[in-house]
Length: 74
Image (cartoon, rainbow, N blue to C red):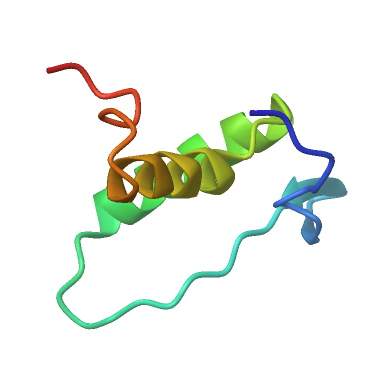
């Protein structure tokens, strides 16, 4: 699903280059590598103008309403 909303609206300048900035809550004991991978995936999808959260929520609604498996393979 495409969306006009930009997930990565905040940037931080490092060595004169503006870098997309994503802030997330972190609990003790969380896997740092998984968090970085998730942030990178969200950035790539945002650059492609894909609303990953919207697609996820639509699939959950579809499953909850009994209208198929939300695009999941059986």
